[in-house]
Length: 71
Image 1 (cartoon, rainbow, N blue to C red):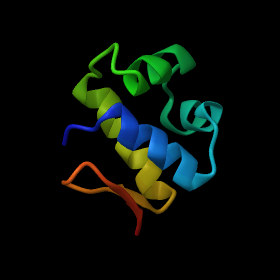
Image 2 (image 1 turned 180 degrees about the vertical axis):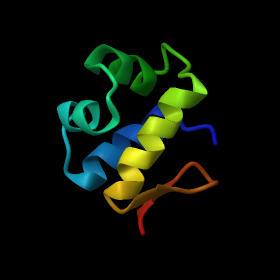
Image 3 (image 1 turned 120 degrees about the horizontal axis):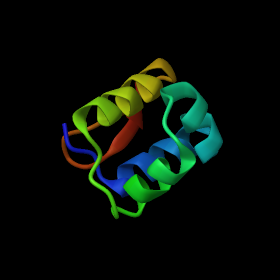
Image 4 (image 1 turned 180 degrees about the horizontal axis):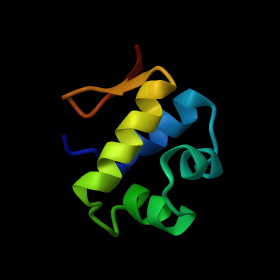
């Protein structure tokens, strides 16, 4: 699944998180998170998988139509 920076940013907000929370839960650095959100960097599959798992565990899922929702 390809995630947009807007989706990840929206998921952070929906979870009530800060970027630091995503860093801790997914094991990804803050600069990497910023680069993904601003789309300056295309994340590797492993990084996306970590992001998806972190949000899945928080009860948030990404939809095929570039959306984000609570499970």
